[in-house]
Image 1 (cartoon, helix red, strand yellow):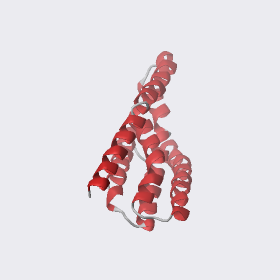
Image 2: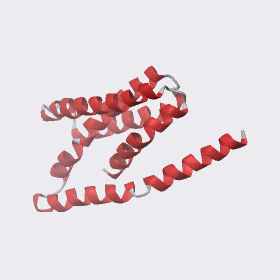
Image 3: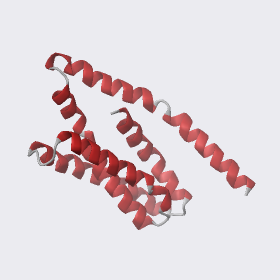
Amino acid sequence: MSFFVFLFMAIITITNDYASDIGIASDLVKYIIIGFSVSDLIGRLGFGVVLDKKWIKLGHFAGLTTVIMGASILVIPFFTNFYYLMSCMFVCGFVLGGNCIMYPILVTHYVDKRDESVALGCLQFYGGVLVLLLPPMIGMYRSATSVISVIK
């Protein structure tokens, strides 16, 4: 859950800057986040049906969505075209949406009934603590890239 929260916040925060840095027009940049949000909604609604109908085991679903999410984020730096970046963000949002609904289900599946509320609270707390590291990390990266561009 911490990984999910950190990744979700990072994607939303840096996508517009990255798209502007690779030369995508500012008029088009806003559609990347809109596409991400729409696909996230579709993923939350669509994967809920998959989990409710038990078409895939819960553990397999968790592993598969995490691998697809990691792969879709890993290839983002290789896309310098709006349409490729938009399709990658669509896949990323779709899988992130499906991954988001999985955590309460995992808690009810693996944790005793009396400990569920504490487990859900801990999931949110640790995700929040990890997100506190995001602004310094983005600032460090942006400072390093601005120094490199000045040197060039």
